[in-house]
Length: 483
Image (tube, rainbow, N blue to C red):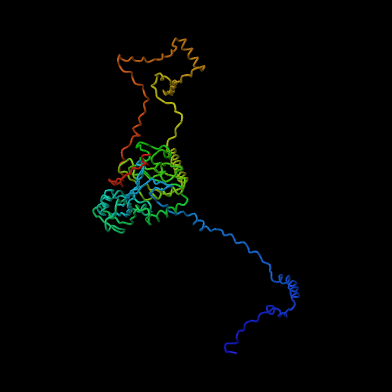
């Protein structure tokens, strides 16, 4: 026995586990066979044990997180400008330009987007009140952009850019590269102009395979998993080329034969496209509209959005007409319901403010001098010299064949003033002079279009529009000839 205590001994196996003692050797073959046959059922009963069926696996219910992850659609489609056997491309790429193969379609400008924060150095003046000329000068001269600056617009996708009074964020479209040293964080101050500008972000939209652009598109698709339409904000003159047009309804359908419809079908079949007149923000110099396009397939919608996101459209028939389409994803039904409800509420408020009409006209009251006869068509003058004027009502002529018409005809015949039907004048053909060639047959004349349908002049350049726009290089192809 050790100081640590007795040794732990292994437990002995139970007696039943030791088994029976060994049987003596059997010398007779027949006896061994008989005993083996007799012992077989007992051995089988002892060895074979009942096998229970395994319980069925429990059904797994997907969690809300798993269902949400399955519904996420953040895959960005691959952009290709090459014609394939099963699919044809309607565009080609040349530098910063996406050029359509049909010349009547808009071109797409892939700018270098420079985001800047504009501050006013004068505390008494808000950044929103800074003149356009001052911002142009600090961009072209202060930053050295020069003629590479195409245009600039106020940013819309950040809350600070919309509500801050001391600062203002703008997005400048540049055709080219930034000068050396003008990277993110670069700041320029101009005391004379009272402006300070700082570069907050630089995004190149020309490369379709840029990781930053792909991440931005994937985020948009992830946020709009239930969307089925694209919203474009465009000048009204781009859709309806009539400067005098005034919409009487909240929306109209896009004309199926317009070049806009053909342009939108470049990415797939369009189920519906509608123009809304009262939902877009009012521009400083030109009315704007929302063009909402719903594609048959979501993949077609995603491809169109991939082509146009953060890029600019160039009107094919107007010079120096370049605008950002401000495209975003939405549900067509929700956008339409909201637009129509807003139009109805506006119509109700207008009806309440307007004076009530349709009331019966009251009899005119006029003062007649004492002793004078009342005017023709009025009642007898009252003792106070006031006469109530009866409005003179001219009866409409009776319809032919009615009793009233027959009675009137009989009365006219008795007075000898029966109206005789007017004689039908037959034009006398002119005889051609002797020896003159016969006149050619007359052809029907085609009515000329109204002046409003003619091509309007280019609208006035907006406050954010640069005077110069780089012209895209158009390609000619067999597709353009087929159009």
